[in-house]
Image: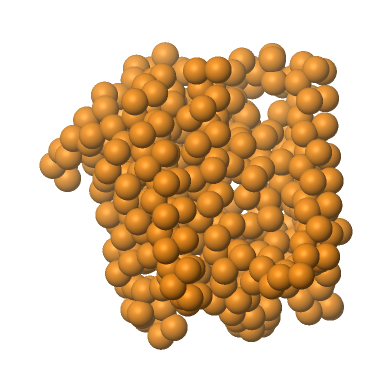
Amino acid sequence: MKSLLPTLVNAASVLAVQVFALVTLAPASFGLFSILYLLFALGSSLSLSLISEAWLRADLRGGGRAEWAEYSSASLYLAGAAGAVTLTLSLLVEPLRSVAWLGALAVAAAVYRSSARYYSVRMGEVGGILAGDAAGLILAVLAWVALYIAGVRELWMMTAVWAVSALAAAVLSKRPNLLKPKSLPEWRRRHVKEIRPLLRDSLLMDAGSIGTPYLLAPALGLANFGVYRAISNVAAPVRLVLNPIRPQLAAAPIESQRSSRRVTVVIAGSLLFGGAAYLGLLLVGVLPVDLGSLSAIIDFALPASVFVAANFLGHYFYIVARSHANARRLLAGRIVQTLLAIVVPIAGVMVGGLTGAIWGYAGCTAVSAVVWMALVLRPTQGDALKSG
């Protein structure tokens, strides 16, 4: 119960921004918002590999736990770099120039918050968790309600809501200690064995999960791209159930993860989320209101539900694999998922346009989920935390 409230508040905080964007913005504007959000996803992915999970794996190995000063300093530098990249790319893309600074602030704050929260969860520091989550949720709701009542439905509205929410959560996180830039090479030297397989995995993952949407955007057009990305957002509740407790899942013994009871619960959970997504979209279809991009994906309720179920299953076992699988097994799973994530949606677009892309997205996610589950459940000699 001690961790339940922070978990629920964090899930609600992150879900609020994504749901507000989904029901407020038309597909074209949602497509632009997704471009910014994908930059945060990239920054968060790199943060996990370079900092959070590298730190956790070093601790699990018995190699010693880095102090907060080192951890928070590395997190701040990475967040600043993510914000700078977002600002630069936004200024180069004409439709995003009007929200370039807001987008950069949102991405930087959100990347730092995700890293700092990971540390606090792992260390059991509720004070560094709940306050930021609650502030992010409250300000997201208040800002969205105020702008929505004022009749604002533009891209800058949701970017401002996200920026305010992320900044509040970051400010109320565990207070960082900024060391000199020379601390970064020391961090890398200390965690190089952990970083190498994690970073390789993240880069391959990002090539499929982030690179592919950017490749599809020109072929689909901005509006259809927004619909395509909205399918991913339907799975937001899945990630928001699992990500807040990611440190606990990652640190749990591999034997407990392979128990028949645990596997049954995870499979049942995936089916539950998939069924809820299908019924939820059917309900949206009968409502007499326009819910922006959410209304635009009603015709894709079936592939969306398949994607949501597969996302839960795959994301769970992927989290376990990131902490317990040896480098060879982690690489094998990542190569399979990346190839599927790149080839199948692109082939789907070529064959069936938007419909083909969405079904391809759902299908490759389902196959990848089975692969990650098999890699975790199949024991190998000495498969606890090898690197190389």
